[in-house]
Image (tube, rainbow, N blue to C red):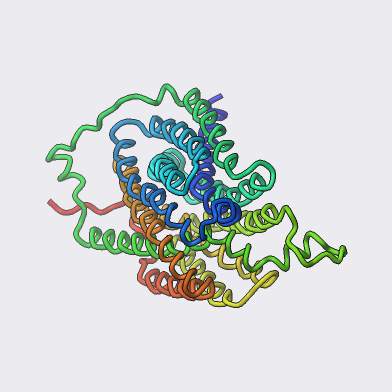
Length: 422
C-alpha cells in the first residue's frame, strides 16, 4: 500500500511537470497557427503578449519556494494544480490580445510554483537523484511537445480556445486527486530560526565555500544562457516548422495524389505532430543523461550536451524540410539533455531546509531570461529571420561550453561538506 502511494505521489508530481510546460506553450502554437489569422495580428506583435506570463513564471518562483519551505510543499502543489487550471480556463475566453496577455500573466504566476517546489520534493524524497530528475524532466518535455500537438489538433477540430479550456479542466481534476493523496501532509509548519550554536556547527571551511561559489556561479551562468536556447527552440519551433516544413507537409499529405500546390486543411495538426515528434524523441535524452549523471558526474555530460547544441545550431541556417527536421532533432537532443544537469547539481549541493528557495532563485534566473528572450526572438525574426537566430544560439552554446570547462571534476555536496575549524 505504501509503495503504491509512493508511486502515485511521483506520478502526480510528474503530471504536474507535464502540465506546467504544456500551459506555458499553448499560446506559442495558437499564436503561430491560429491567432495571426483570426485576429489579423503579426506573429512578432503577438509574442509581446506572452512576455508578462514568462516574467511571472520567473519572478514568482522565489516567493513560491519560500512559501513552500515555510508552510507546506504539498500545499503549494495543490494550489499549483487548481490555480493554473482555473486561470487557463479563463484565458480560453479572451477576446483580444490584451486579455489573453493578462490571462497568460496569471497562468505564469501559478506555473512558477512547480519547479522550486516539485523539484525540491523529488530531490529530497528519493535517493536516485539523477534518474528521478531525468524521469521528471521527460514528463516536462512531453508537456512541451504536447503543447504543439494538442494545440494544433484542437485548432483544426475545435478551435484554439479549447486548447486552454480542456487542459485547465484536467489540471483541476488532478489537483483534487493530489489533495486526496497528500491531505495529511498539508499542514502549517513554521521553521524555527537557527541558534548561534547551530550556525557555528554548520560553518564550512573557506576553501569549500569558494568551491561552492564557483559551482553556483557556473550553475546560474549556464542557466541564464541555456534559457535563451530553450525558449527560442520550444517557443518558436512551431513557427519555424510552419515556414520550413511546407514541402514535407505536402508530401506527407498528398503522397502520390499529385495535389502539391496547396497546404492541406489539417496542416496545423501535421506541423504540431512534427514538433511533437522532435520534442518527444529529444526528451528521452534526459533518461540517458540521468544515468550518466549518477555514474560520471555533471562535467562530462555537460560538455557533451553543449557540443551537440553548438554543432547542430551552426548547421541549421538555410535548411528546410527533411534536412531541417533532422537538424532540429540534433539541437533538441542537446537542449533537452542539458536541462536536468543544473537541477542535479543544486539537489546535491543545497541543504534540505533551503532547497526549495534555492531552486526558486535558479528558476527566477531561468524564467526571467525566458521572458526577456521573447522580445529578442521577435526582434531578430522580424529583422533578419530564423537563420540569424540560429547563429545567435550557436554562440550561446559556445559560451556554455567555455563555462563548463571550469566546473570541478568532483561536485561539492551538502551531505559531505568539510566544516571550518573552531
